[in-house]
Length: 51
Image (cartoon, rainbow, N blue to C red; front, side, top):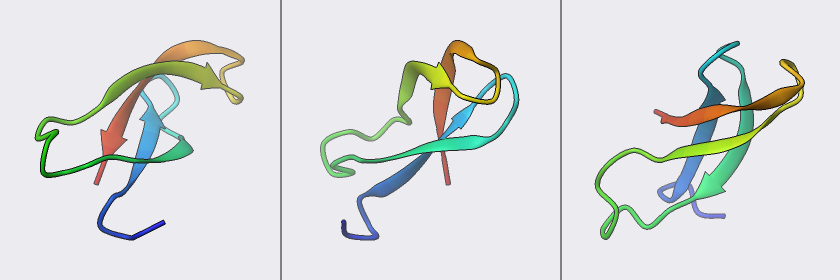
């Protein structure tokens, strides 16, 4: 994956980085918010894009 499109997704509950994803930064300007499973919390939580 290219570095300019690679983003980190962080759990909002435990603040751990669990997922890496890609996005087109030219078409999507706002930060991603996805509900995903956190293996540390052991439940589905909201994950936000970090820098």
